[in-house]
Length: 322
Image 1: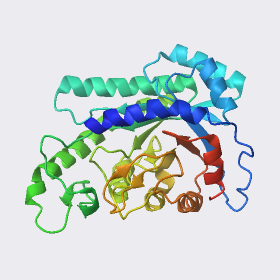
Image 2 (image 1 turned 45 degrees about the vertical axis):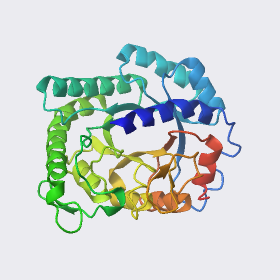
Image 3 (image 1 turned 135 degrees about the horizontal axis):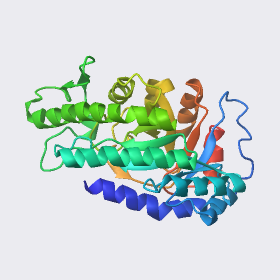
Image 4 (image 1 turned 180 degrees about the vertical axis):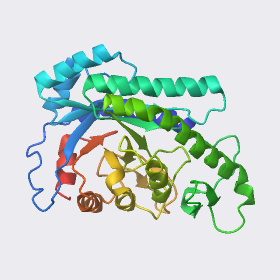
């Protein structure tokens, strides 16, 4: 889908900007009012020694690598370099995996690539991979506008009873595609759980603009359906801002202990609340003090990794609840 390209370009264009905005002055100082401690992360295409040094100098404590296809032995060398520098490669971004592909060969390739990402993460010393299981939409498929979703879920199987108020007949194709994606994702991830347990790397399923699991209850159902400590949620704090009025703080409280990691970025809603744009961190519609409060309430001691424009100094302010 067109947005996936835009999103990756957004990451690539802005990650370097985030690394170059200077050293944070006071680390986690000022967090005394919170019980939890957060860690500052950045995204690197390749965690080379030079890139890791730059991230460390920029005030970051760890990085997320997008190089999920690296051989485990090469990943282990990156881990050694990171340990020498005093920084951690804490996760790996696998990104899109077409688990809803009806072509068996494509589905098998997607499962195999996810396994490869798990083994690379083990080499890096990372404890999770970010995985987007699949995507649907396009081709004229009718679906509610982001602000019109009103979803009724069948708790027994994760299928959708309805997605909007009133007659849902026009959304039949979307509901069927959504149910297919839920079923196929569950089957594919089940195949990966033994690898995750073997490598001690969590499969963290991300919320993203893929027209799937757009409300926190749906995402929670999917993740919790595996009943496995090796499958959790990777929450992108801005990816669902367009689905007003449900804010990221509600997502955080709903996911609770299922939350493995967080991406920090912002989204600026248009004045009418319909659509928007991607500004720098803390310049959009995310209510960061509420996000910090919610993270503290659920006892989240973990990473906020910047995806897009922003700096370690921005994270310091967020960590303080500002």
